[in-house]
Image 1 (cartoon, rainbow, N blue to C red):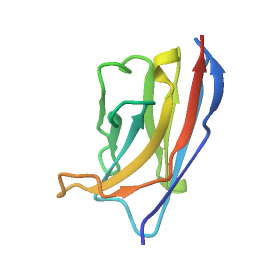
Image 2 (image 1 turned 90 degrees about the vertical axis):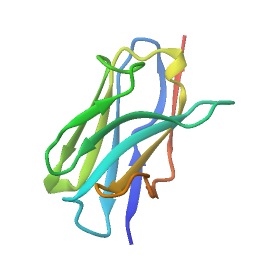
Image 3 (image 1 turned 30 degrees about the vertical axis):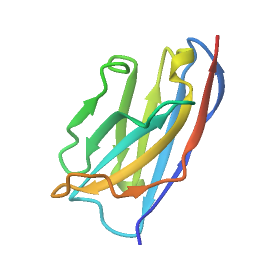
Length: 119
């Protein structure tokens, strides 16, 4: 059973940095793509970034490109989201997600971690 556990959220000021972690377990993820999504208050969940576990190829939402970096540590089965130059509009619950590369939808989700950016 796939389990994704996020950590690293918190309260920071605008311009600060924060790194989120997603510890993955329950299977091998070599044929998976991992992603971060977020849901801000009153808004729908939106894609933030994704990474291929095998190739390391990445993809970013326009709103975070150049500020956020997604990475992975194969030995630790952990995916990271380094967030720099944080803005108040980055305030949201951040979720880690996983899908097999042959699937179109993300089907495994973590419980989420709160990130709050004060102005």
